[in-house]
Amino acid sequence: MNPILEEIFEKRTTKSVDGRTVKVNAQISRHEGELIRKCIELTGAEVSLEVGLAFGTSAMIICESLKKTERTRHYIMDPYQMYEASYGGIGLNNIRKSGFGDIIEFIDKPSQLALPELAQRNVTVDFAFIDGWHTFDHTLVDFFFTDKLLREGGIVILDDTDWPAISRLVSFIDSNRSYEYIAGTPPRTYKRNVSPLKQAVRSKLRNITDKRHCTLPRHGATAFRKMSEDHRNWDHFQGF
Ligand SMILES: C[S@@+](CC[C@H](N)C(=O)[O-])C[C@H]1O[C@@H](n2cnc3c(N)ncnc32)[C@H](O)[C@@H]1O
Image (cartoon, rainbow, N blue to C red):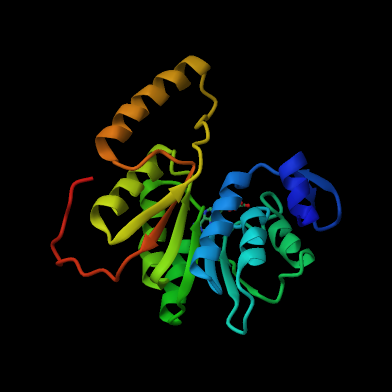
């Protein structure tokens, strides 16, 4: 395995651009990495996109897995990558050190601006990974524009689908859009400085709500295949 990825997964550290060891506080799990690899293999993807770069963990896995041809390209967008206080360019540096510098295009903008720009450029992708700003509406916008870029038969993975906001988006996709559920990874615990008791109560409530709203299993990350372009009537709505 790529030694940079190995360090991130084993020690949860990586190197800053000037070589210091820094903590990695945002990255996908090994399970999610495996799901990405499988989905890229399933689609034979050559062109992909990713929302949210952080330290480059998912980006390195995507770049490793893409089929290498003249078309091969990975589009990445993240408005905080170059901020010293956030990632200080570490994600991009890790990608370059891994030898993938010439297949990526990094867009230093938020996804809500970068994705429509790619659509205007008529970019088409075979695979997409959405792991950016995790509010319901933000992730919905990411999904909406990703769908415009994704070819029929292509796969999109949404990360953190065990979070309430993203799990509701999964329900929307499942009930309203022409996407087929493929697979997912085990859920990760959702905690934000709350006591174990509160966490347990929330988890029970969430299970009840999830069951009411979503027929799909609760996953850490969920993969969907695009079955067709959007042929719904202009006034279509299915509750979710
Ligand atoms: C959970 S991290 C992504 C981790 C990454 N997938 C990995 O495995 O290394 C979320 C990322 O989304 C980025 N982000 C936040 N808002 C964004 C936006 N509007 N557009 C694109 N990226 C955004 C953050 O800067 C952060 O790097």
